[in-house]
Every structure is written in structure tokens, then in C-alpha cells.
Length: 511
Image 1 (cartoon, rainbow, N blue to C red):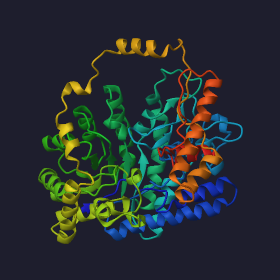
Image 2: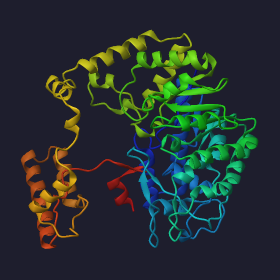
Image 3: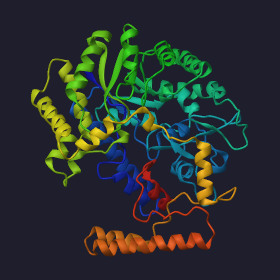
Image 4: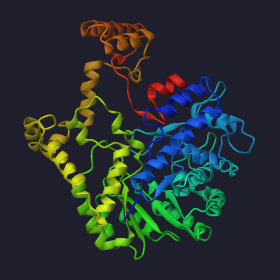
């Protein structure tokens, strides 16, 4: 029984890439130094998966910043303000798009579906001259192959790329981004042809927008795109990967009828209703890459439950056509539990980071093939039972309160008009009130206080006193500026939302 990983974290188990990037951006290291760190990380990831027994190992899921920006580079869709004049896109242009530079701003970032990851939004219009400007996908496939690891090159699918884009500045908001499909497919054909020539046997197209609520015109774009690519894809096994939610019946039908496609990767963790679509109508002779190991959390998989799901699917698609996979890229979870040296054994037994999830995927595949590791499954079952019963996570009062909730408890008792009236009477706000987002800058003094508190150099009382003094400063400032709705500035926290390879605060520091 085969196993597959959709994608893997690129930062490194000890954030090696983050530190290498910051050093490069600060002109403390060379491009060659950065490339060496990146190559070492890629090699380690590929060899780790190979050693764990994974059959279908992805390549081109590594990125210096963002996978959608990598696709933009591949297509040569560089906004004119960055002054790119053609040729292979280098670090200067790439990082200018990602972070801006002294003269022009960065491209917009927005959330990658409902995750905390943010991607660089392509800026497109009718005048974009697409060209094959980054050979990264082919180069990384060859790099892995030279290490003795045959991988599945991964590309952002052409339709999802366009649906995730926005009209460039000056382009009508009503411009149909899908009208650009005939312009980008020739570049995809070039990439596919090079991958075939390099020896690739499989190729993975990530088309996550298939889980969105798409209209018939948008669904038709998938049909048209893969019909156009069919001849070029001939001789390759083609995997279309979706994730993060269920497919609608219409999207499932569109997916399973695409020309030249060998396999379908489906998220069966968040897409629980998709299982029913599979059971009712799965194309004969096609592969199902069943995403049963959650790529979006840090909890150990319930192996017994997943194995039961896989056995039911095996009866539908056939033993030789079922591949055990992650629900999505493991990009969205931590890298390796081995580095968590301060956690006690009980909590550690409940957890699985990316490295552990790779092992879980292979353990499930081996179990399906009749080579079940009884000790591994027994330890997992024990950990599952421990987590469910432990007083550290089980609070009877909370459970009773949650069970007592009624449907009406999830709805406000008054309508929005009444709430707005009450708010206005209480706050007496002007027509256009002023406020801030919430967080004020983390000052050097705040950083010093937090660092000393963490190192036990100051007491908790001293720490709280310093925080309260900072809150008073920002409130006084807002009152002085006549701000209408005040915030306390959030001096006590740092928000860990992912912005590409950095947190919000880290990105602000690096720009």
C-alpha cells in the first residue's frame, strides 16, 4: 500500500531558513549562503520522507517565501513597478515582490483560505506578458533525483492560480481573470515538458479552489484547462490535489471527469461529506489519495479510526488504487516533536508534528498492506484514551454547560439595529469614528521587560507594573489625538499569525 505527503514545512526544525533569510536581507550573508541552507533543508526533508517509507514524496513545495509567489515567478507575472526586464527571476525581484523595497511597496498578502498562512496575491490584467521565468520546479525535481529520491513535482494548478489572483491596479474590477487561461497554459506546457524530459513519472497540481462555492463558468474553466493540457500530460500520472473542505457534488463531478487525470487527492478530515461522494461514484481505475492524517493540527492521529475509514474506501476504489495521504500540506503544523524537550511524556504522547505525521501516514499504509505495527497502534490507542480522559483537558462542568446549549444560545436576543442604537447611546460616536487596529509597536523597553521576565530577572509584579505603564502611555496618546474608540495597545502579547515564513511582527521588523 502506497503513501503520500501533500507538502512539508520549509522553515526547518530550528527555523534555519528564517534565520538565513534575515541574515541575507541584512546583508550579513551571501545569496550562496542562503541557497546552501535551503538546499540542505530540502535534502533533509526528502531523505527523511524516503527513510520513513513514503512512496510519493513531493518536490517544489519548498519556498523562500510563498508558493503562490513561486507560481507568479514561474509565469513571469511580475508587476511593472519592480522593473524586471525578463530572464530568470532572481532574489532581487522575488523579494521585492514579497517585501517591497526602498522605492516600491510589496504585493498584497491575504489569507490562504481559512488558515493562518498568508500568500502573495498575483496582480493580473489583459496586458500581462507571461513568460517562463523561473525553472524552480524542474531544478528541484532534478536536485532530488540526484540525491536518489524520485519525487512528485508540485505546481499550483492554473485555474486556482487565476481564481486566487486580483485585477492589477488600473484594471477594471470586473475583468475576468479566467480569460487569461489561454495565456498561462503555454507556460504550464513548457514546465510539464521539461519535467517529463527530466524523468518525472508523476505530477501534482494543487487546485484547492475546487472546494469553494464555484459557479458553472468557473467549474468549466477546470474542464477546459485540463483538456488543453491533456496531450502534454500524456505519459505522466497526474494527481489533482484539493484540501481544506468538502467538494460540492458539482465540483466532485467536474474533478472526476477531468481529461488526462490519474488520481484525486481529497481532504477527508475536513471534507467528511466527500467520503459519501466517493462511495457513491468513484471513477473506475483511478487512484484515490486519501487525506486522513490532519495536516492542520498538532494532535496525533487516531490510527484505529483512520484505518477503519481507509478499509471502507479500499472496498470502493480497490486495494491497488488507494494511497494514504495527509489532508493538506504539513506546512500548517510544527516541524518536529523531538525538539520539544520541556514537555512531559503524557502531553508528548498526544502530539504529532510534521515529522511524526509522516510516520503516521506510512504506518497506516503498512497496516492496510497487512504489515500492521501492533506496538505502534497500541501506543497510539493508549495516548488517544489518555487525552480523552485526562483531567488536564477534561472539565466536567464545561462539558455539561456545552451539552446544555440550545440553538437559540448561538444567536443574539436583539437584532443589529437595536444593538447599534444601544451602542450609540452608550458611546455617542461621530458618523466616522476613529480607532486603530489594536496593536501598538513593541518598543525596545517592552522587549527588555519581557526578556527579563522570561529570564526570571524581574518579578511578575514588576512585569505587570511595566505593562500597565505602557497601557497608560498609549491610552493617553490616543486621548491627546482625540481618537474616538481607544485600544490598550496589546503590550502583553505578540500575535503569532503566519505571514508567509514570518509572523506579523517579524514581517514588520524585516521590511
